[in-house]
Amino acid sequence: MNLIEKFYAAKRSARLGGIAAAVVLLAALPAMAQQPKPWQMNLQEPHSSLMEQMVEFHDFLLYMIFAVSLFVLGLMLYTILRFNEKRNPNPSKTTHNTLLEVMWSVLPIFLLVVIGLFSLPLLYRADDTVNADLTIKVIGRQWYWSYEYPDHGDFTFDAFMIPDDEIKEGQLRLLSTDENLVLPVGKKIRVLVTSSDVLHAFAMPALGSKIDAVPGRTNEIWFDIDEPGMYYGQCSELCGSGHAFMPIAIQAVTQTEFDAWVVDARKRYAGADQELTPRLVRVARNDAPVGAGVR
Image (tube, rainbow, N blue to C red; front, side, top):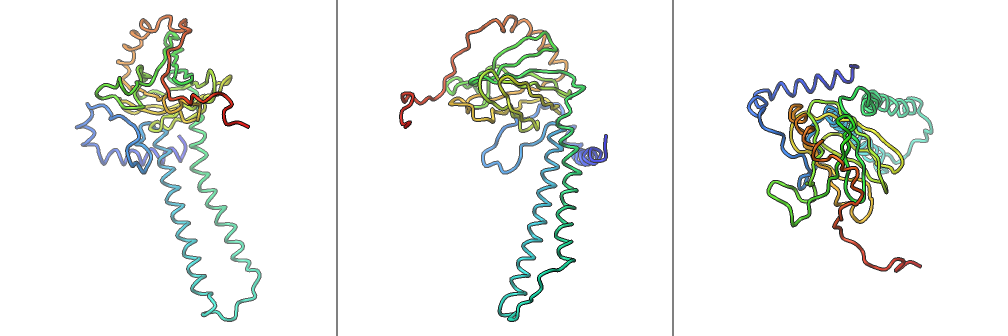
């Protein structure tokens, strides 16, 4: 663990220590569904160690940007008030100032170095998919997702968005799917992402995960999940008329529950890869003739 990671770990420990009593009282309760909220102004609550570090870095940059903006605003106000025509009728003829030129070159370089000290370890860690506890494969399709579990019998299944007229209590419009991607908590999960048709993007905001699904190419990303619950994401690449209707629903469970689910899933999805006829996806379409309006 490098110095930057120790810094984030220390901050996380301090924050957790401050709410230890609440954690004890709520330990038996699953995490609430992580999803976009109406009028949300900030990032979703982080539920992976990687996303926690991303949020810390985001907040750090926000403070830095705010400080730089105030500094520049102060310089502008000082210049306007000190060197206006009324107070300074005879303008200076100075064309060079060595100290100022050195300062306005050195200060931005210093800020970039500071940003690099925090961003480069984060970038490296986000790309470090080795030593994963399990691997899953995600395939983007028009317009749904297919999931494969190569480490657990290589079974596969499809996940379709639940239509509005079939939503049940507790399910979320445009986010709930008929099958969930079930994953264990506290494990490093490597996700292999590809596409069978056009560009898609696998994005889970609460887990700090977003990567393109490219036909003919396999990209990879990783995340861990800190507590059981439902986590929602969506395709984040404009992929056609059904783009808004291919959500991602992850059900995080304990390792014991995951092992039991795998046993059942092997039976349920046995031979699913032999089903070559996809289900119909109900989406809004433009019925105008091909080429209409094109000159």
